[in-house]
Image (cartoon, rainbow, N blue to C red; front, side, top):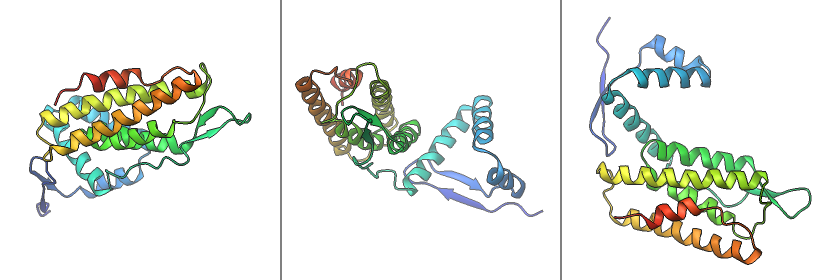
Length: 207
């Protein structure tokens, strides 16, 4: 059998030399369930060398860039109102936006994820929710997501993957502005501000 052809991948990350996927392996990838692929990937990364994990995240970043990673989630349709017409509840669109943001910051593209998370925070302005309801629970999760995204941003900077120094300032500035708007709005209607952790993460940020 002839040796596999080799391709080189850059996309701003360390240059990688890649061979084509074996036909049988490709058949597995195309037909395995999502749960099986997750289990296989986790096992491979857990038992592999650190360089394997680095190569995996580099490939993930390349893929996410190809699929328009910086696309900002729309503020329309992320939330709707309950049957009483007063309290907000999350929608499937919010789940989709959060999945996108988590993919980005999980792959080390924290600043790209902040655009999506900022739009989610902004979409909460003008909404009302019950203190102990599902909406409050979701907002607490989003608060934690923002904190994790901020950590991803720090690692992105430390890894030398930010070529434009204006990107961090703009991304964090926009998020800070949206969080501030949310805080003022919640204060007006007497709710509990849901983004304390995110606010603290930004206040502790150092460029």
